[in-house]
Length: 152
Image (tube, rainbow, N blue to C red; front, side):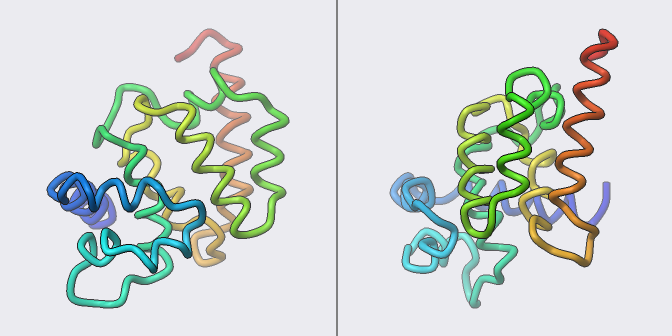
């Protein structure tokens, strides 16, 4: 298990330990930046100023009740989400792209595993890990091809 997965698992565990009201704070916001005005964010990341990546992770955490599931996120997308919607999300500008991606995750809820989604949410919009939107589209088409071939 890599360090990143360990950190993501710790975030998920911390979220699960939050009081229900703090969890609801994180679930109710409309945009990622709105989280900075909620107590739940500062309870999730105590003792410091949350980074933009931590805010992005917190934006998705309430919609991933399971740490891991048997189905990969991109396989879920290929099975249940239209090609047009995937392209629309990838072409959207911030913060609309994150809002649209979260709506997609909400639609697939509760089948999305946090450890599968967390790297996408964490690196979304970051150049350092490669263009995540391009990887999102590529992952969709690879999963779609596997689905067409009969693989799950």
